[in-house]
Every structure is written in structure tokens, then in C-alpha cells.
Image (cartoon, rainbow over all chains, first blue to last red; front, side, top):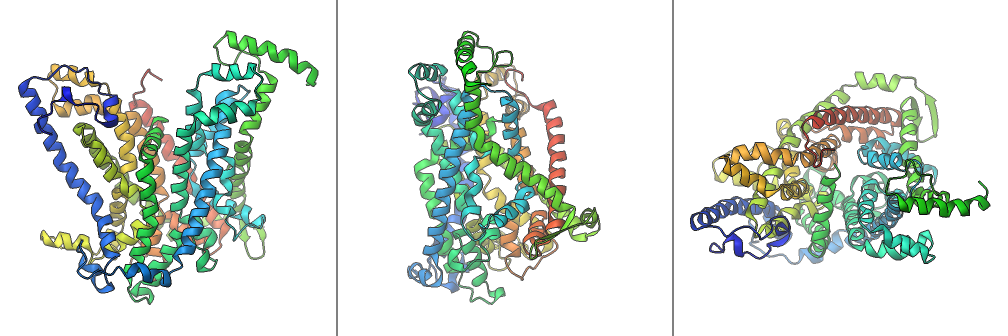
Length: 311
Length: 324
């Protein structure tokens, strides 16, 4: 790779979009210094990659060790215990936790992405008094710390008798969420208005403009919203702690379940120190996210990058 | 108001609005379109009234009362909850811890994320692979991260201290020594810094390359280029990251709760009492809703003031393309 000069490199990933190939061919000494620069940059990149990967590799190794070897910190287990993966199903109600988490995450992602799209289309297409002020309010709520609304929200769910169900864990998503509204609105604003005007002249209703034109075209950003919320709901520990901690262990979500397992096996809390089971459970909760990332990486990265652009 | 008047005006305004591209401030609104617009955004309006405005006012009301969850009785408490904010030493402790953590975490996160982003931006080819690897921790659920780091940070047998020992450093008792509680959590936070990194990376890619070339011709070195071109050009992303990371740092909960407050065996109860953790305990362990609501409002006011200051300072330094 060291011999390839900048001028001949064909579009290296997304970076190429900005640095187009019309740069003049570089002369000998400059090309050389450029290669040195790349090597100098690659060394720390590899080092950091090792730092970022180590805990995950350690986790995989620890999940395959007997309890006595978890702390030997070797990345290759001395004694392989594939058995851990069988045992853990007896030790912990993992299937329940994963089922609960998947269901809640799907509900949360589906509701918030549809509701946010509807609201975003309202802000993007229609002209009505107070639109800009209201959209400013949408952006303002993004800055609101969650702990301020935490207690009254709990009381609302208590008053409606929905405590102990899944509703408190996704119910607020039915009304859309600020960042997702912002994201979808940006996308709709990029669609040519003539598209909608033409459909209006052909007799489409406003709802059809949204459902037949805007929605199908916005699938990419819709996927971003869906994946983001799926991940957020999957990871959500605090809400599960508030709303599900009093329920039986089978009703926990995966994050709450792992917190429970951390205590259950902790020697200081009277456990046997069977951390390998906690590690198996942690790995099983992480794997779906890594799988999601492997198929939807560009959506995640694009979504995060968009966050910075709203500032 | 009556439907019969709607139709003619409807067509009138639409043709007018099509003629002029000027936004709707001066144009009369098409009533049917406006109504439809309100209908489309109505889910958000309801949500805002109930779950944002409603809860905030409700929370304010509760903060001036003693709320007994068991009997559902609200007694007025005057300002006593707010007086307790001043008198209760745990409030000061938790606020101090949180402030300390934020001051430690935010600059480190910013610097580390910017460093990674600049490395990725500089290397060009192959950056995609490293970006993927760096992003994996961000995909790891916080509970899994915590359960891993609980063992990695173990003072005696943990991998981090074993690694330090191999290079001759006697690592601290991360999760036991009160002085190392915050650095432990900062370490976990830094491991998942890639979200901030991606935002910086997107900003770096938008810096016009010819700026650097012109600067090179003028004889500017890399340091000068960084401070005179890169930093001003990405100041928007910097501004956003600082504000968001500060808000997050003040609400740090999951890491602290999972590492220290899961059960009764907390080796460093004073040093690990973060504001959000104490707020949670008062609300959902003691069911002291009135006091907890007052705590929540104090946090809200603090964050408002901090964000306001950051925006004021930021406006002086942030460069917006096209001069906003």
C-alpha cells in the first residue's frame, strides 16, 4: 500500500467525497513524505484499535473460562468451557430477558419512528402560523435533562394504572421525539416541493402526500431513526430500573437482568463469584447490537454525524 | 370560519404562494393547509403538553409539597424542600462529585475524540476499518460495559492493573479508593467516546482542503494550521459536543449505579454519590418525591445556566459557514 500515490487512489470510502481526485499528481519527494505520514498515523491508529478491542476480546475469552480462570486475563482460555453457554440458560432466565428487551425495543422503535415522521412532515411541508416557534420548542426539548421529567412521568403512568406493564417503557414514543423529528424534517426539506404540488393537483390528500410520497422516499433516514431508537431502548437501564425492578426476575429486560446477575454472583453480596455467567450474559446482550451495527453501520454513523450538524 | 369561505380562498392563496418563494410571514395562510399541518404535528403537541410542559409544571408543584406515594396525599411544604437542598450535606457532596466528574470527563472526551478523528481524517485509506473498530464500544450496552469494567478495574486481579504492573506501575484500587472513583468512570466513558469522534470526523471532512494548501504556501506549520484553520472551521461541532457532553456528564447515572450502587456493598459511598444517583435514590428508594423534584429542578436550573454561558461564550468563537 505504501507505493500507491494519492493521485491514483480510487475513492477511499466516504472520505473521498470531500477530497476529490482532481488533485495534481504529486512529485517524488512529496509522495514519499506523504507515505511516511501515513505510516506515522497508522501506528497510533493500530494502538488505539487494540485498546478499544481489548475489553471486548477479554469479554469473549472470560465467557469461555471456568470461574477460577476469569481473572487470569489471558485472551485465550487455558481451559475451554463452552459449557458456560449451556449452563447459563439454567442459571439465568436469559430467554425471558431477551424476549422482553426485543419486544420493548421493537415497540419503542416502531412507535417513535412513525410518530416522528408524521410530525416532521407537518413541520416540513405545511405552512401554518407559529410553525417556526413550535419547531424551536421541539429543538429546545432536546436539551431538557431527563431527570427533571422523570418523577412526574412516573406519576402519570401510576395514575393511568399502567405501572407494571411495558407501556411506561415506550409510551412517550407515541408522540415522537425531538431529535428524530429534526432528522426526518431535514430529509423532507430536501425533497423537491414540486413533487407534492403535482400530486396535490392530481387530487392526492395531504395524508397521501405523506404516506405515498414522503414516507417511501425517506426510508434511509427512517432506518436511521429506527436503528437509533432500537439501540437506545435495548440499552435503556434506568427506565427498566424504575419501572420493572419490583417485578419478578423473569419480567426484567436484558440490562436489568445483567445488573441483577452482577449482584447475584458477586462474592461481596453472598454470591459464588461465577463471573463467567455474567460475562456470557453480557456478551449475549452485546451481540445483537454488534450484528445490527454490521448490517447498518452507515446508518448509525450518518445519524451521529447529523447530530453535530444541527448545532 | 364557515366551510364555504374556505374553498375560494384556498385556491387563491395557493397560487399566490406558488408565485412568490418568500416564506409565509407576509402571505396569508391557506386555512386547510394550516389545519392539516396542525393535525400532522398534533402528536408532538400532545406529547409536549403532557410529557414536557405538563411534567415540568407538575414537577415544580411537587417540589413545593410533601408527596406520599403510598397514600397519594400531597401536603403543601412551602419552600422546605428547597431549604433541605441547602442543608442536606448529601446534596452538596453529590453535586461536588458530579461537577468534579464533568470537569474531568468533558475536556478529556473532547481531546481524545478530536485526536482520534484527526488521525482517521489524516490516514485516508483504511480509515473505514478503524472507524468501525472504534465504534464497537459505542454499540456495547452500558450494562455489558459496566460488568466488564467491574472485573477489568479490579484492584488486585483486574487486567488493567496487571497490565500496569507489567510495566512497573502499581495500579490504584480503582473501585475502592475514593480518589479513583471518578477516573474509573472517566475511563469507561472514554472507551465509548466514538460518538463524539464521529461528529468531529464529519466536521473535519467539511474543512475545505485548499485552506491548508494556501496556509502551506504561506509557510504555516502543522500546529499553526491546527489552531488557525482546523479549530475555527470545526468550532460548530466543538460547540455542540461540549454542550451535549456537559449535559450528559451532569446526568451520569448508569455507570455509577452499576459499579457502586447495585447492592449494599459500596466501598466508596461518598465519592461515588453522583447527583443523578442520589436523585434516583430519594425518588425511587425513599419515595421522597417532593425533595427529589426539588433536586431535579435545581439540576435543571444549573444546566440552563451552564448552557446559557456556553452559548454566550460559544457565539464569540463559533464560526458558522455563510455567517449566520
